[in-house]
Structures are given as C-alpha cells and as structure tokens.
Image (tube, rainbow, N blue to C red; front, side):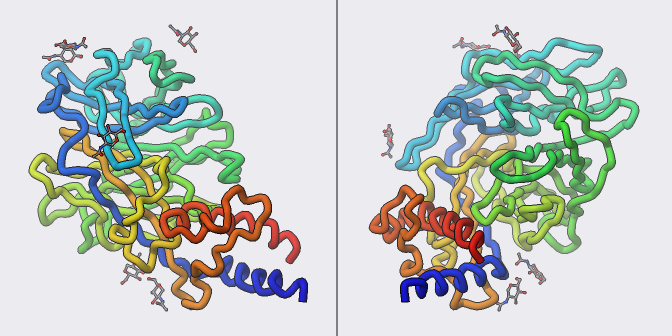
Length: 389
Ligand SMILES: *[C@@H]1O[C@H](CO)[C@@H](O)[C@H](O)[C@H]1NC(C)=O
Ligand SMILES: *[C@@H]1O[C@H](CO)[C@@H](O)[C@H](O)[C@H]1NC(C)=O
Ligand SMILES: *[C@@H]1O[C@H](CO)[C@@H](O)[C@H](O)[C@H]1NC(C)=O
Ligand SMILES: *[C@@H]1O[C@H](CO)[C@@H](O)[C@H](O)[C@H]1NC(C)=O
Ligand SMILES: *[C@@H]1O[C@H](CO)[C@@H](O)[C@H](O)[C@H]1NC(C)=O
Ligand SMILES: *[C@@H]1O[C@H](CO)[C@@H](O)[C@H](O)[C@H]1NC(C)=O
C-alpha cells in the first residue's frame, strides 16, 4: 500500500514523457506606446532592432540605430516592474559602442544589430560589419560587463572569401543546463535560415545547412530572418522565434518554431499563423529580436493570452521588437498533450510531494503560482523517479 502512490505517479510520468505535445505560442503588447522612439527622447531617427541582456539583476538593451550620419549600436537600460510597467532610457550614456577598427568600417554595415547572448561569464554580440568591398559580413564582440561599453572585437564569423551575406543571426550555447554537447549559430540570408555548429564556440565553418525556408501561401511566403536566441522551455525543447515577410502586403511578422531538446537542428513544430503583425500606427514591420524569461513568471490573466486549455503549462517571456521604434511585448509559450486528455496535469496532481522542491503544496494550488512552480516540482519528480523505473 505504501508504494501505491509511486506506482501511480510513475505511470502518469511515463505517459507525460511520451506525450504528444501540441505547442502554442502567443503574444500581447505591454502597451500601445513604444519604449524607445525619437518622439520620446531618442537622438536617433530610427531605433531599428534591440536585444535584452541581464546583468547583476538589472536589464540592459543593445539597440541598433540610424541617423543621418550612419548606423550605430547604443546601450540602453530597461526597467520592468511586476505591475507590467515597462520603460527604457533612450541611451545609457549618449555613447555609441565602439570596437577597435580593423580594415573594416563597422559603421556602414546597414542592419547592424543581430543579437546579444550570455555564455560562460561573457556576453556575446552578433552584428554586421562591412568588408573591404563594403560587403556586409557577420561579426562578433564580447564583454564581461555589457553596461561598461567596453567590448572586445572578435572579428568576422566567416572568412570574407566565403562571401556570405548575412542578415540576422543568433547563438544557442551548449551549457550544463541544456546538456547540448556543442554550440549552434543560426543565421539567414533572407531566403532561408541556416545553422552552423561548433565544439569550441570559437571556430564557425560556413556549411550553410538549411533549417527553415519560406512557406508558400503562409505569412512567411517570401523571406525569412532569424529572430531570437532559442530559449529552453521547461520541457527541454527550445522556443525559437523568427521574422518573415509575405508577398501580399510586404510586411514583416513574427513566426514561432519549437526546436528539439536533444538536437535543436530538428524543428518539431512550426506555427501556421504569425503571432505578431503590425497593428499600431507606429508599427510598419515587426522584428521581434529578443526575449528573456519573465522574472515575475506569468501574469494572473495568462489564460486570456494563451487560452484556458494551455494555462497549466504556460511559460512567460518579455520581448522587444522594432522597427524604427522599439516596443515591448509579452510572449507566452505552452503546450497540451493532445494524445490523451487524461494525462493532462490537473491541479490535483500538482501537490508538492518532492521534499527537494522549495515550494509549498498550498502555493502549488494557487492558480497564478501553478504554471511556474508546480511544473518545476513535477520535473524534479520526473528526474528522480525515472532513475528508479
Ligand atoms: C548621429 O549620431 C551620432 C552618434 O550619436 C552623432 O555623433 C551624430 O552627430 C548624429 N548625427 C546627427 C545628424 O544627428
Ligand atoms: C508600477 O510600479 C512602478 C514601480 O513601483 C511604479 O512606478 C508605477 O507607477 C506602477 N504603475 C502602475 C500602473 O501601477
Ligand atoms: C546626448 O546627445 C545629444 C545630441 O547628440 C544632446 O542633445 C544631449 O544633450 C545629450 N545628452 C546627454 C545626457 O548628454
Ligand atoms: C576593457 O576590457 C579589456 C579586456 O577585458 C580590459 O583589459 C580593459 O582593462 C577594459 N577597459 C576598461 C576601461 O575597463
Ligand atoms: C500546421 O498545419 C498543418 C497542416 O494543416 C498541420 O499538420 C500542423 O500540425 C499545423 N501546425 C501547428 C503548429 O498547428
Ligand atoms: C494532435 O496535434 C496534431 C498536430 O496539430 C494534429 O494533427 C492531431 O490531429 C491532434 N490530435 C488530436 C487527438 O487532437
């Protein structure tokens, strides 16, 4: 009798492990107003693309900007409160990011900001430079303090001789947490998204292996661009957002994919509809280029964004998007097991039975708390129980 609950739990967990997950991703703008714009204090005509970083419990933004004299990367600070208020400084210190010049002219790259990511104590910036023929090439830089404006230029990712004309790119670093045995670089030439792998995270060869193409008769029928850094979900799979254009109205929208936990070059799901389109008068195209986990978890009304069926597995992110002005958006990802409704976790299965879990059983039953903590507890149980199966 004593073992009965464990047997039950094991059956439940094996079903979950084999679940046929149906993912869903949705967005909701924080407000109708941009957070960075010439109209609200920016010196730049255009604030094109932005990436969020976290440093010592503060949020920063690297913003790719444009004015009459060229393209610049600037640093900014982001403020975000639990009540959903989000804002940013137009720039942190009126300084543009500078890298020691090589033979390149880093200012005239065009679409200059790609992504910012963190790995092993360093922040990595992917951006555009131009080669000696004014040809845009993918470059990178690193720093241990992104607020310092002291970046070390690492040069071009691919040899100039490869003549690879990239538009947007992002890294997926292999870490202890995601258990990936290597590092990944995603990039596009607007006609496809490709990936590269690297074991040392320093050398990247240009194999141009395709990952995603435009799809006829969809919102992404014409061009496709890398969007965000792939982020780990609690299932272990990765959420990877991209930007795409269709021929009907020539507008850029946001699409979503889920990449496989073990081999992130396998796209296990891809949304048929875009999750964000230009809607407000200041939005002409949507380039959702960066998301980070929401430090406050999901809001209590997350069901209004993702749908009530999906609330129990919801994970929430904050994101920034351009183009011309920078806005802020909430991104929600979730899944249901659609192979058998009986394996869908209910609040009954959400009791805190794992002594290693810091949450209290009573907290697990709070609807606002449940999506964040209970699933996490269950994952701990999955790990420890599967060891005995
Ligand atoms: C454009 O921005 C750069 C960097 O802040 C600044 O040096 C330059 O004066 C600006 N040009 C104009 C026309 O505002
Ligand atoms: C949200 O919280 C911040 C910080 O406490 C405060 O400055 C702001 O006025 C609040 N906004 C609303 C709408 O309550
Ligand atoms: C930033 O630069 C602009 C023009 O380039 C200037 O008008 C403004 O006063 C500067 N702001 C600060 C805080 O130095
Ligand atoms: C900038 O970073 C380099 C390399 O990490 C370091 O040697 C240098 O002291 C830093 N400079 C400043 C002003 O912090
Ligand atoms: C997209 O549509 C195809 C064909 O109708 C379907 O097989 C696929 O499951 C859909 N994808 C999602 C994520 O709903
Ligand atoms: C489960 O999801 C897939 C992919 O969207 C769909 O093709 C299938 O019909 C769904 N199955 C059930 C039982 O709803």
